[in-house]
Length: 212
Image 1 (cartoon, rainbow, N blue to C red):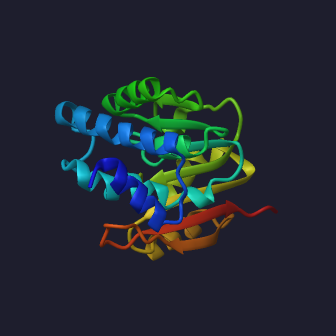
Image 2: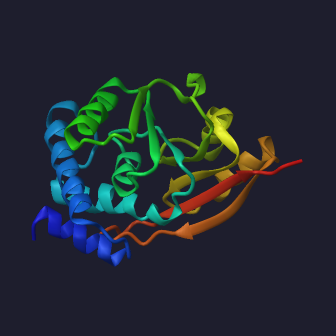
């Protein structure tokens, strides 16, 4: 099975519909990632077919939860899930932030080669970043603890905005640590993510700030 077929079949299992262009862009992205990974060590996943399930399909599993117009992926690494979401939602604006220069250089190259006009890449720490407008969604995938995520990015989230944290096991202890410091934050939803080809547990936790 070709890479493109693997991506399309996995997306179909997730009930995510891809246009021909989106399927092409996702295939080109994973080919670029595999090529750059040999020299720059962007991900521990070496096998390009494993990248499809571990990175592309894992990212696609949160596609239904993209709301608003301005979205940020913090600790994006090589662009996961932010670059994938930008391909899925060309009408939305995505800021992909990472403090690792090798990873932001790859994202900048991928943005250029894939022609993604709706992506802005930032090489900085989230605590010191100032956006041009508040974000409707701030997402992360294996970035840090929930407390660190909220503390590092809360100044960037709009009052009505949502934190989306992709996790492995349901983060019960992380939530307790978060509430102990930030009682103004509450979990609004959590979802078990069933990712084709991935045996490990995957969860999406959605957080909002409680208004006084």
